[in-house]
Length: 292
Ligand SMILES: [Zn+2]
Image 1 (cartoon, helix red, strand yellow):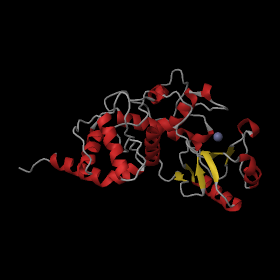
Image 2 (tube, protein in one colour; image 1 turned 120 degrees about the vertical axis):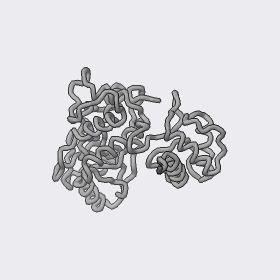
Image 3 (cartoon, rainbow, N blue to C red; image 1 turned 90 degrees about the horizontal axis):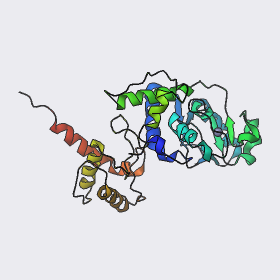
Image 4 (spheres, rainbow, N blue to C red; image 1 turned 135 degrees about the vertical axis):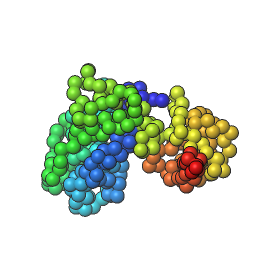
């Protein structure tokens, strides 16, 4: 299991699994506040989590209409998880890095645009703020019709942590991260698994890691792979090299990128879903108590 504090790169991709769980938890607690920008005419940067506040999405859609071609969005909304990775590795950063809890991107009203030299004037004309000028040239903010939601990603993490650690250390769900040197919440973020928790309401990312992932979700994956016709001798709830090989075989057989990764929103999970559903419903049938 790779923990958030183990990530030594200035990149949010390694924590994408946990990131998605925190956003899922956020949406449970604040339905409709964050919306997807997946459908807009944009190219997505490697680290982009394609979410922002509704007023920001509308402003971006209007801009794209007047610009007439796609732009590359490198960052939009950022959870406290990604911000922690950036903060931990800020010595590798080219520019400014906000503290977890304080970054503009945590409010879902900021975007970083790759083609900023070409689009800056038109964005400003459309009402966007070029907040930091040349100190952070790709960064633009939208300020009209938005709510303050920076604390809600922290609340979402705190609630997710509590659900994932029943009987363990529990956090107060107050949206406060406080002084990083003494913050329990910051410590728990750093001690969370980068691929996400095994036992919360949104699937973690499954893949070969060192040490290996174990759990019921891995066991279900192994049985689903078998149902899909992939040969897998052991179904031991451990994502070892044999499971990795089986996932890649399944991906190759289904014309998917054979990267061995099953993320919650990825194509491999979609292709496996019918088999997973069969496995999960069979398992719940066997534990149904018999009527006396
Ligand atoms: Zn930015």
